[in-house]
Amino acid sequence: MNKEKQILRQKIRLQRSQLSSEIRKEKDRLIFEALVQEPAVQNADVILAYASCHDEPDTWKFITWALEQKKKIALPKCGQNRQMKFLVISRLEELQAGTHDIPEPVTSQKAVITEHSVCIVPGLAFTREGCRLGQGAGYYDRFLKNYPDLYTIGICYDFMIQDALPCEVHDCQIRKIITDAEGGRK
Image 1: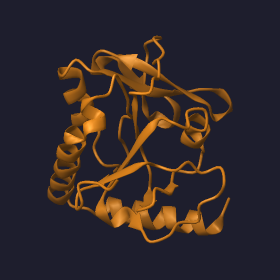
Image 2: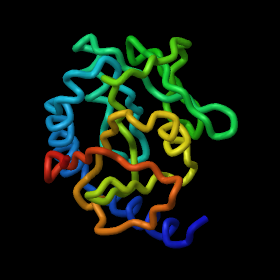
Image 3: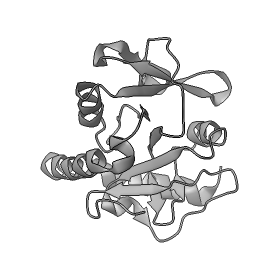
Image 4: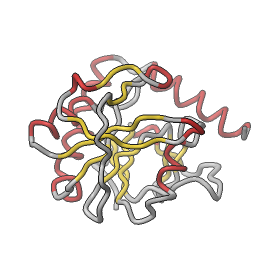
């Protein structure tokens, strides 16, 4: 594993863990508001999201909003060889602890990805140009390489934006970044 990436991951995780609940709640609110106003999200036929955990920016409010809006929403289920697929859910009760104790769908309806689909991508850090530092397992990089035209949105707290990251050839590029400070970048 790249030592520089490992050190940066530890630094960002520590910063996230030190946010007070009040500051975190406000940052999450700002990210949520920007995300639901994003035209690609409003016009999406399928939204690929993820269930946040471990001090990540909150996605639960967004998932609830999408379900209330009757949008088709799918969350990842991890499989063998660090592969994942996105399964459609119709309610939060269709999630249960899965790989790494991350909530995963127990449904079986696989999401059909089209040119109007959007993928909300987690990350520990991003650059303004769309380089992403993930958790290190490569699930999203493997998934996204199969969908090069999929519109991707990374969400993060403002301090998670870095001037540069040790990106490698296999690291996926994110099209748009939404933070609590900026409301996004194109």
